[in-house]
Amino acid sequence: MNRFQSLILISVILISSSCKMNSKKAIVADADTSFSISKLHPRYLQYKGIPVFPAGISVNFSNIIQPKLFCESIARRDIHYLVVNLNMADSSIDKPYQVINTKFNLDSFSSNYWNRLNTLLSYSSKNKIMLQLNLFLVSDVTINSWANNPFNPKNNSNILKLNSSDFYNTIELSDSITFNYQKQFVQKIAEVVKPYDNIICQLLTDVPTDATLQLGEKLAQAFKDISKAVPLSMNYKFMTIYDEQFMSLMNASGSFSFLDISANVSAENQEYNDNFGFAYHFISDKPRPVIVTSLPYLNERNTLIQSCQSLFAGAASVSIFPVFYDMNASDKVQNVLKTLKSFLTEYDVFSGIPDTQSKLLKERDDNEAYLHYIKDEQYAVFFPASGEVKLDLTEIKGKFILRSLDISKGIWSESIVVKGKQLVLITGKCDGGSIVLLSKK
Image (tube, rainbow, N blue to C red):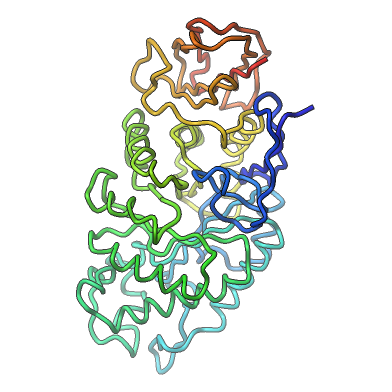
């Protein structure tokens, strides 16, 4: 019999997963059934009252022309976590606002846009898809996109003066006109998502300026005035997590209930892990989920390595952004998602912690191996490539069943038994990466 039951949302399926060897206590469902912060494990999310690890894909809303078919299609592929960027500067799609006399009227919402969004919300809920909506993308205010943005004064009849570079600085500049329209859009989103229990939101996405936190906090309050239950976040794009502004964001737990550190995707290997570890510990006084959205899918191996590295660094979710999107984009990430599923059905990540400084791994080189573990119960060692380290179990009694997962193939090796009370030699034999799992016998 399995020793605990949990719900693992691995894009690839909403699984009622039962880890076979680790936890001795069953996970009891919380009364709150919404997609929200886990009460029992505050560094993770929950859905239907059960802890989840969402792993899925990121898509621009402009690519979701037929939301019903889209949701049904990804559900058939067992994808149950979807991050949707509500981009509004794509010239090929309808916008949130009506056009009156050739210009957008920011006081009048477009029924076509909001009907399409409502259809997405409805069918994501019906297909048990966890949905994250990202608002106010920096890609909508770049030089090329600003020309099509409804907030560009040239495109609307409401805002007299606004540069793209000032879009995120409306509070600092006391631009009450633009801010009120930003607030109006956020509150409209809050209204349409309020009936659903499968949604979290990011109010400002990949923003580049240091004045943005003021705007984010005011928009968060405006959102909560309409819909208090939906978890919120914002993130920066061109800053490191060591910047003062990013640390201010990490301290803003009153406004934002989860943290997105996708800016860290520009780092690699050991630096990626060290940066993540810094953020993980920085918020330890008020722990909350740290997510990674829009990992760029360039090739399967790199995406697989970075997804596993995120998980082992303490991430609460991962979404992958196919750089060149088409209707079959979700197929490109299936092996990545299936590998995560295969591992998380065997390892109780919610009860584990990352060894961010690799204190239990001896004779380790930088970026050679990473550890996530439940003391005395399970130890998972991730090798981005082939390698060999020693796991310090000198203070742990008993025997462990050891198996290795070839992450590029998703295949587990035959199990062997190893003893505690020693330094255990752990070998990653796969050039494409592997996870070695030790579970108490």
